[in-house]
Image 1 (cartoon, rainbow over the protein chains, first blue to last red):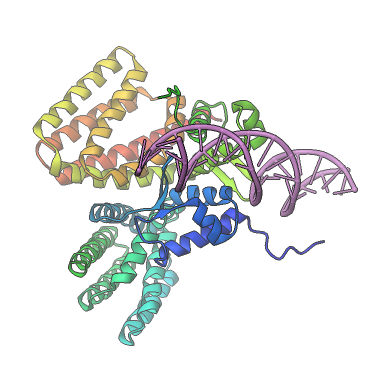
Image 2 (cartoon, rainbow over the protein chains, first blue to last red):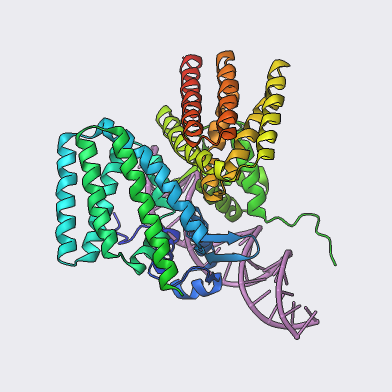
Length: 220
Length: 220
DNA sequence: AAGTGGTCTAGACCACCTT
DNA sequence: AGGTGGTCTAGACCACTTA
């Protein structure tokens, strides 16, 4: 037996590093990703870089034109608005379905996460709050037993998430989030499919309007 | 100047041919796609094949495991049901939005397509009918001004469409389609967002149930 | 016409499975 | 240990742009 220490493939490692560099802003939206430069930066040959870029195109982070090369996907207001509408449609469907499978103990877990979220907000631990927010929705989404749908909304979300954490949340928005989550928990407890869907739709719509407003005000 | 006759890239051509071979059943769901064999079949070297497979993975036609190679995505009942639920969620959102932009003359075009569809069905031209059906929904989807959402539903649909055209439609199903489309046109004319959404939801749900039922009865 | 940079090839390399 | 088949490299090739 022979311990290699690292048995990921090169393209997977490169893909993960490029993704990280995009999401942390090393490569900003719209920036060209020149293969030769990436060869230098990551110390591998062209082909693994190209394959990584192909995969990142599949994830929606990169756009790739034949004979023209790769660039970090640009985010304009239309794109963001459209993706939020997709998220709204899918999450509304997922929360409906989740009620079918949601157990009492899962609802308790959601309540616990929501309590922790509110505590994190009180003590101004924003990155912890962000993480708990994601976890809250993730539990609902996973419980709907539709991994394909979850993959679709996770897919094109990395860039928008990184944008959102750059612009932050207003106090007003945090209060809305808390109120919405409490209503969603209530709807789940009552097994009220219609109410859960209505609140989720409103929740995503508010998130969209808030982000777009903050982008407009903070970039001019 | 030099006329090359064909200036697509090799990987794009290979990708299109593999896609076609998958959708026409040359490579059935679950079948392994061995790079060396594809090299023979298409007469190019390994790397363009690999890039084509990466892209097809992005389209959902192929699944790709590191160090394990590629295979045609398997279609089980869960996957199909889940993808129909995604389609239902997104098309319902799109038909709502489309009402905002839909002009009288576009509604006339829809009515014309629907008339042609019914004539095609009468005269048993099923492939023409299939095409008109796609065109009907495509017009509504495009009119919603959300190309990202349209791309998502088109994306993972190739395999399911090829399956559907293999199993065909029942007479009962064709009558349902006609009735649903007429109701959708009526809802658009009246600018009735709620009715359009309800009928579209029912329409996709029926399509899902019909396909799954036919798969069950015809494969045992 | 030269430069830039994306794309393709041949073959070597190496992980995993079977014996 | 040997075979199968996925992965990586170096360099050649070629499309497109700028002058």
